[in-house]
Amino acid sequence: MATKSSRIQQHRVRLPGTIVRTNSSGNNNGSNSTTSAADRLGMKALYLQRSQRSMALTHQAFQDALLLNANHAVNLGNYALFLYLDCGRHDQAQQFFERAIRADAHNTTNLAHYANFLKCVRGDIGRAEVLYLQALHLAPHDPDLIGNYAGLLAKTPDGKGKAKQLLREGLQKAPGHRRNILRLASLLSEQGQFEAAEAWLKQLLALLEADDPQHQSATTLTQSTVKWHLELAHVYGNYANLLRKQPQRWEDAKKMYGMAMQFNPTHPLLQRNLYGFASFAVTSLFLRDWKNHTKPKLSSV
Image 1 (spheres, rainbow, N blue to C red):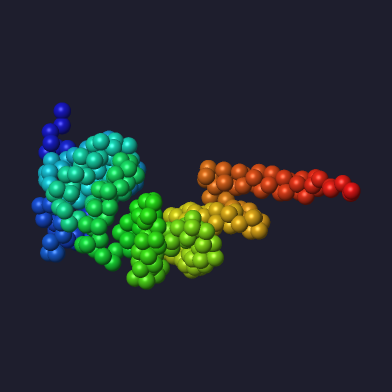
Image 2 (spheres, one colour):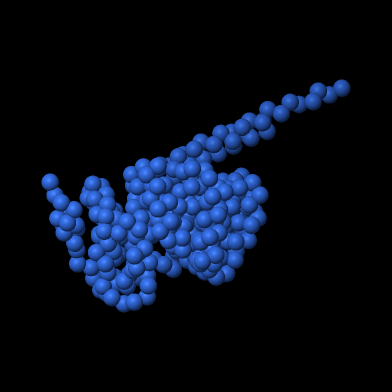
């Protein structure tokens, strides 16, 4: 049976460049030096997770890293996220999120990830809001934090107005933040502000078209193109959803769904929306014409 030291030896990898040393809780202390063994094992685990290698090896790498430093906030938070998103082990993920927050209450990444977990998995909006506010107090200009908190507010009965305000403020600080533009457009669409929503979506498409990965080097072109296509499909799909709410724009909606399908033809939600909308539109037009042709004529007296 392999011992702890032999398992850790198996996970040692050479890391490119010089990494900033972290302290005992996994925080950056600003001194340029080599990383600790716990840092290296944590980064190995993260690499295994992101490259979708063996789940068992990823688990083992995280566990070995935490054997070296049980209070390493970054490793605790990353392991919690792995357990949540990749494994679906929600109870265990929550335990590690709690440990990560106790290890370092100032790690904004862990605060945001845990808040999202509490919102999406536990439905604990109150605690999630506390964590988002704590993170925003530490990083008030972070556009991702602003957007995530606005997303939480938008799901509450009285929070949509504040969510819009937050997103507008966030876009003043980071005008090219595509996710926040889409959030704001979606929120405006929900409230029936179609013209304003469409203006933001047009701006978003212009940003995406300007970011065409064809301008990148050949080494990153394929991966970037796939990601770009998926994002375009997502935006076109949302644009189509906006247009389908306006009967006079149904033809445009159909074209937008078609555009989305060009970039992501196998997406089940896009397929459902397109074919469901086509069936709905045909039925609606038939009923409209049927009513117009079957209006009862008044008998003359």
